[in-house]
View 1 (tube, rainbow, N blue to C red):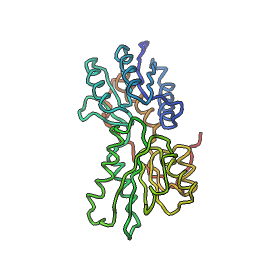
View 2 (cartoon, rainbow, N blue to C red):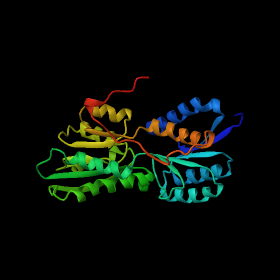
View 3 (tube, one colour):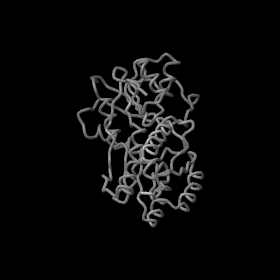
Length: 286
């Protein structure tokens, strides 16, 4: 029991991103809890661009450890990295996005396709007249990420599977990151519902509030402070919560069970899809 277990944690930088900060808080909670069993964490953070990611990949490949916790944001580069890393024969657990169709690695997070499917169902509720739905893509360089595309595919699949919902039509708009200055009133003409397939629903909500546009239903992801603000104001209608802190904690817990306890842990653990409305949002008590 005097053995040290080194876990590499390979994540995006989180200083300005509440979602990833929550992941790290869960990881730190687990690290503190399991430190008495010799668990030591070594962090490798990358910026939200492929150049920074590839630089970090080299460091992770050169680092000797017992297990890896990894958030595969860039799909193609992450697949290439995991194929190389497989040669090390070290347990890997992915969080946030599942890019492996094989059983080589563990995954803890949401079923992204199902979460998009759920968003489609929420949009369809209580609708009798013709509805124009806008899929609002607010992206960085990571717009081709697996989780992002799976949500959009799931969203469209709901309406394909429910052919009786013939009163819906769809359009898409893409703006770069936090570019509220790229938005204009014409984007929202005739729109009844908006689906934002990532955590930036608050950017759309802010624009609607500033321009006094009402009566548009918004569905987005994650309990970010800004999202909660507009949820409480009634501008965002639904948020699908991914429980990022739980993902981080359970990722380290998986490696602890696998390597320290040498137990067979479940390889895929889907976080339940939580639908948060203004009426059922209660901040976690510290």
